[in-house]
Image 1 (tube, rainbow, N blue to C red):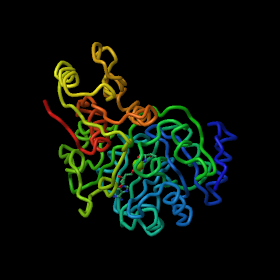
Image 2: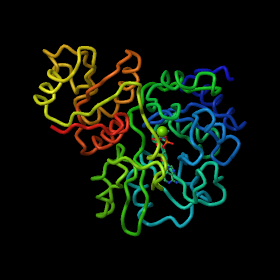
Image 3: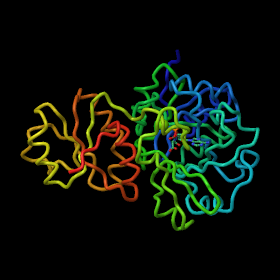
Image 4: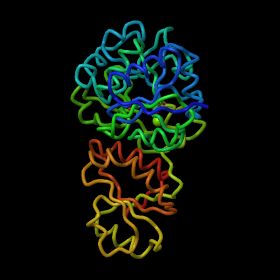
Length: 338
Ligand code: TXA
Ligand code: MG
């Protein structure tokens, strides 16, 4: 058991967290996407503590975070030309690239794979922390395995209190959904997990962008997923969510005839649901706003004890695809198309 300390995102807070990281401990770290649970990526026993704190399956690999290009040296090999182009276009920022790893990255970090996901975050505190620790930091999202990813320090505290020594509080995450994860296949880019860097933006780097089946479909538990994280239960609140893929009028029509009085509606904007008797929670009018708020709203559903939820369907374009991908998993792939 740890006494979990909240640290300020200032020089003293960063120095304290960095000292813990250098001693092989775990720290809650803000990034522009979601909060991460960081440890020295090169220290196998430190990384093991991440898996224990999260209750994460050991074959689910971690993303390694670097602060500058110099840190890439010796971590990965055979870097394709396309990867340099992507790094130039999107780093620092919410893009993770899967690359062949060297022996410096322990198998604990890579979940037993011979590849590793690398990302250079843009959040200033994250970058300062990586630099102060002086090592690349392995960091999955800082939620308990299966819960919505944390976009506020309070979310991390609620899942990790007693399980880790510290959390740096840097306010709400700017993006709100996890990074875009890609792999390279010859001249093509395979999109394994959609994020703020969209398929269209990737298409400007390579004309061939393959959207992996796992982005919008359930991956069988025994299947060998291109991205192991996709086969696990994710983002699931206690409520049973159903996505209603329909326009505003059809959504309202469906809810007024099918939803019970104590069901909860996840709408884009409060004004949409006037006249409906159910409680409504708005999660945003634009794709970006939905991305920022989705995980907080999923946690709110638990707080209010929602049992059945009907949610409006995100756009599936741009960042909307990332919102759809997360909401699909939260809804266990229940979608009604009207
Ligand atoms: O934005 C983010 O990426 C956040 C912040 C903290 O940086 N991190 C994050 O990590 O979302 P995590 O562990 O929650 O999700 C990592 C995803 C998982 O689905 C995992 O399976 C996949 O990336 N992944 C990591 N390494 C991989 C690899 N070598 N091959 C295929 N997929 C990989
Ligand atoms: Mg995660």
